[in-house]
Image (cartoon, rainbow, N blue to C red; front, side, top):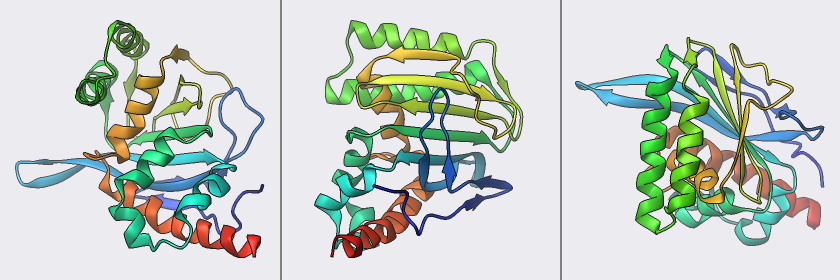
Length: 223
């Protein structure tokens, strides 16, 4: 297995998402699956808040290729199952969320956690353990503030560990600030970004476009 040869950097507003990064507390290299802006329509205007990039362990490509090779970018984009395979796949992921405008930590985590709780309740995975995990999640952000250019990193393991790191720029910290052991919450974080009701449709489109190329490349290497 190797990093896809076709992987490139992606620019989102004034942010640059590197093609390959090393996650916190790890010696591995992850490749950039896709990146896009997150925003909200406020009084008729689309206000951009965050640039989000999703990085994946290199074994994600052959694992996804077994099921999705030969599909067009449009078919990938239209398939919720494709994104659920990214979310639930047996490989590590790193999500980088860099702020485009100032966001207060507690305010930011309140909205993120509300989205996660709503999703977990909708699929029946929200119980006492998840309630406790949400409390830990919110507590990690209680003293944080995010000016433009600052970043939240979410490191996700297939076993359900969610690692949180904070940076004043796009630099990836060597160590994680907090680690939460809850698979349902870990998956819900990414689900709210690229799932059925995504906060970043641009990120979904980027993932579909780029994975079409990655899977085509994997298919030709097999041949």
